[in-house]
Length: 340
Image 1 (tube, rainbow, N blue to C red):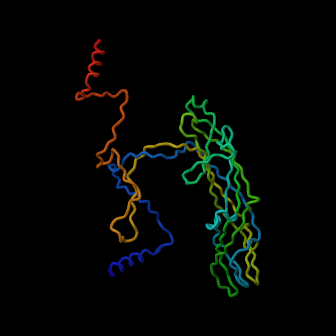
Image 2 (cartoon, one colour):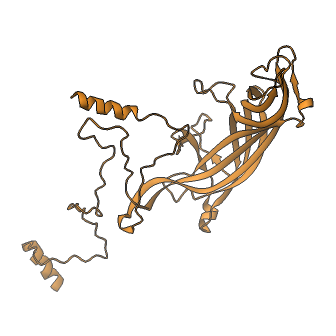
């Protein structure tokens, strides 16, 4: 018993982190053979139309304070690298310092469906959040032509929050020794009360609202990143170091880069080719002999060990022939009626 416990502990200890980065495991494997490929029906969302817009804004920052302090009589002899990334506080998603993109869209040629109180109806999207709006428009004219109906939109994007800037510099101290130092600072881009505002225009095509059980949906999502540089690329002009305290202040230019995508989405049922369900291997040596499954086994007419088949529904064109069925007198009367 004690030896088994030692083996289990050794397996757990061996699972230490050996690298700062990692590779993802999907659990999907395929040997290249088409024998394992099976058709599967899935109920999902299809992109009917989409458009992508790229936006950019510039922010000039003057005398931004950076950490750490470099010490007395230190000077920067070379700037090695400048990096910028958005700030996000995982403990508070509503932190006003989080760099946030807030899109707001108005459409013409159609309407967002509302609940009677002026609030648009939102449904669950692929993200698991209610971030899709229902669209309604009179599509009858284009339906007769078997085409989609265009709607036009105006999108206003508001950006607020902070970014994190890191600068790798080569520093020479009072004894002329050189070492590499990374200076960091959280730089405010715009307060939530006074955000940066940008506007773009777009056109999207929607399918028929009459020939479907579902109304088309409108989804929009944006992502933002940043690029920073020393304002004039001059150490003498843009970087100031207090000779007594070593405090560092730097002039910056920060570019805010935004990508926004807008989609018209419709629920559909698709037949896709599948190589099977993902199968993951456990990381730790098991103590239990068996473990429960997470998903039910697929049993259908394509299963090799399935003896249960649902009877197909007969259409008017199908012939039903049976010589073994005897109904009785009513059947005989019906034959006599046919002969007359």
